[in-house]
Amino acid sequence: MSSPPMTSPQQGIPQHSWGKLMAVCGPALRPGGLKLTEQALEQCAFPQGAVLIDAGCGLGESLKLFTARGFRAIGIDSDPKILKSCDSNAQTILASLDDMPLESNTADGIFCECVLNLVGSRKRALAEFWRVLKDNGLLVYSDLIAQGSIDNPDNTKSPARNDTSLIHKNPKGPKNQDDNLANGSCLKGAITAPEILSLLIGGGFKIISAKDCLAELNSLAAALVWAYGREGLNELCNLGGGLGGNLEGGLGSSPNSDPNSDLGGDLSYPKRPMSYLMVIAAKEPRENQKL
Amino acid sequence: MAHAFSKFGAEGWYCPKCNKPLERVSVNVEYMGASFFVELPGCPTCGTILVDQELSSGKMLEVEKLLEDK
Image (tube, rainbow over all chains, first blue to last red; front, side, top):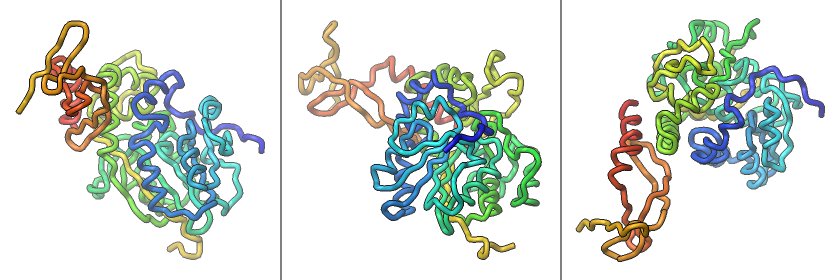
C-alpha cells in the first residue's frame, strides 16, 4: 500500500528528547503509559482477532500490547522517523490521521492516545475514525484537556481558542480551515472536555465512558521534575512544545519565559490548569443518529 | 523506633538495625495523588528507605512544590 502525503504535523516530540522521556515514562510517551491502554482494553472487551488501529502509534508500545493479546494490530503515524523506530511486528502505515488509507467499516477498535491535539484537523480525524470503524466499533481517545474538566462541564471557554461556538453550531460540517491549532503542541491544541465530547457526539459517536486522568498527568509531571528538575522540564518544553510543554503549561508555569524557545514568537498562551481525559466512545450507525 | 542510618566513608550507607549496606531499590513515591517510581537507597532486609537531607530539600521539595501549585 502506497503512503499518502503527510498532511498533519509531525509528533511534537523531537527524536533527541525521546530518550529523556522514555527513561521516565517508558516507551509509551503519554500520561498513564500502557496502564491506561490496558484499562481501556479490559473495558472494551474486544473479541480475539479483533482489528485494532493505533492512530498515532509512535514507537509501537500499544501495538505490541495488542498483538500480545491476540488482536490484529495496525499502526498509523505521520512521522517517518517515528515509524522507522517503531518496535513492533504489526503492520504500520505512514499516513495522516485525517486521511487514513484504510477501508471503511473494517476496524473493531481505534486507539488514539495523546495524539489528536497534534493533528491538523481534529474534526477530519474523527470523521476518519468514524468511517473506518465498524458499526458500534469503539474509539479509545485520550489527550490533554484545557480547563473545564468533566467535573466542571459548564466551563466551556478555552483560552487556546476563540471560535468555540462553531463547534456547537455546526458539529458535523467540515470547515474550510483546520479546526485545530495545528501548531505541534498538545498544550496549545488542547480543548476542554465538554468541547471534545461535543465533537465526538457531533461526529457520530456515543460516549460510553469519560474519565479524568489528572492523577496520571500529575504523576508524569512529578516524575519528570524528579528526574530532570524544573529546568530540565523547561528544556523539554523548549524542544518543540511536545510532552514537556504540555506538562509545564499544565503545572501553571509560563513556557514563554525563554525568548529562544523553538515555539517562536507565538508564546502568548496563558497559564491554565490542564488535565488528561480518556474517553471510550462507540460509532453510532447513521440510522441511529439523531439529526 | 526510628533508626539513624550510618555512613562509613566511601563504602556508603549502612542500616544500623540490620547492619547491612544499603542498596538501590525501586520505591513508589506518592504525594497529593501523584505517584511514580524512583530508585533510592534502602535496606535489603528491613526495607527502610533513606531520604537524605540533600534529597529532601532538593528535588523532593521541588516536586512537592510543583504538585502543591496545581
